[in-house]
Amino acid sequence: MTKVGTAKAVSAQSPVKIAPALHFLMVEDNDADHDLIVRELKTGGFRFTSEMAQTSEQFRARVRTLHPDVVLADYNLGQWRGIEAVEILRQEGLDIPVILVTGALGDTTAVECIKQGATDYVLKDSLPKLPHAIRRALHEQQLRKQRREAEEELAKKVKELARSNQDLEQFAYVASHDLQEPLRMVAAYTQLLAEKYKGKLDEQADKYIHYAVDGATRMQTLVQDLLAFSRSGRDGTEMSATDTKDVVQQALLNLEAAIQDSKTQINVGDLPTVHANAGQLRQVFQNFIGNALKFRKAEPPVVQILAQREGPEWIFSVADNGIGISSDFLNDVFVIFHRLHTRDEYPGNGIGLAICKRIIERHGGRVWVESEKGVGTTFKFALPTDKSMETTAHGDQCTNGNQSGGASRG
Image (cartoon, rainbow, N blue to C red; front, side, top):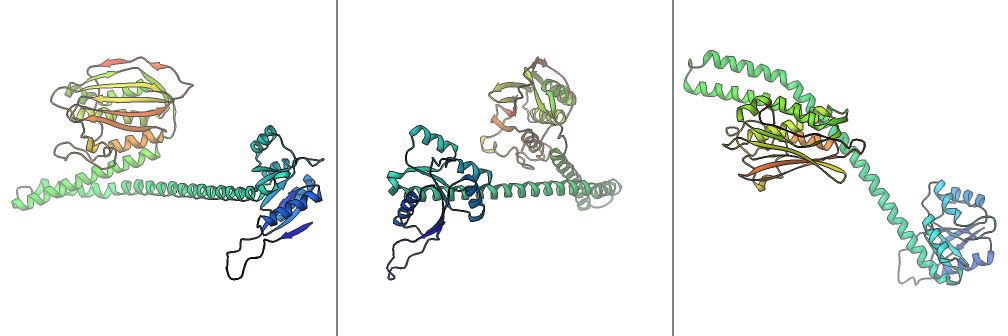
């Protein structure tokens, strides 16, 4: 049974935007109650059509063919309960407001119905409240739709960004890889040119040759660093239980010569086992320790490596007593190719810390730096804890140990 309702006539002299007609599906087995609801909808100013469904089978068939805007359901219908319409709509994948219009409904039952998914309820002896309940339900439905669309658009943008980043990463890898050979040729032949003709031409020519050799060499280093940065996002995807004490010891072995030359004291505290890629985590520690060795003051460096549990994270720190970083530049140290010092002061291209940041974020962590100029620097990073790995390794103290590497600050 279909009924059509219209709002009261409006003067032709005051044009208004006519709202689209709504379609109500009424879960009701009493014709008199149905007529009362229809009259209230007309009084409320709705343009609408309506259908009735008295059984769950009729209701399911109606929602599949009619796609109603709002469901008005009685709670007790003999054969079934109107609240079951919520579950049917959920099974059909439809977001349609369900308002219970019933003769009596206790507070406890009303709360339970709302929990199950009913949008609202109106007692039949308070039908004048129905138009307001309908408008509110439609407004909430519109907000849900907008939120879904925004989430879908965001997911689409995230997917596009991930694809774009992947393409960019692939391009950086291929470009830096393919540039190595021609740059090697340029560097090799400019060096030969310098060796063969140095002192045989005028002073200006020697200067030009020096510029060419220096530029080619720096470009080679830059391309190699770019390749390393690209590889940090491609390699090391396999993760497992990793003893960070062993990882730090490997990093110290790699830095052994630089540590001995600078008479650096390394203090290692208790370190945990984490879920990580051991090779990449070693690279992180090696870069941070290498920075401490590079950016040191006149006195021998002291480096302290610690970890402590804070909620769902392990917080690692690598602290030194070096030259420190001005507070104005703390936000810039992890930016790729960003340097805080000239090449004459400290060598490097400013990519090591960017690689550290990328590795740590790929592990689901975060990284930051605390520093005071002239006092020292502490690099900190957080990694998620793994509850299946709660043991910590014993700390030790190294006074001399291990080889070169590390990052350029900035």
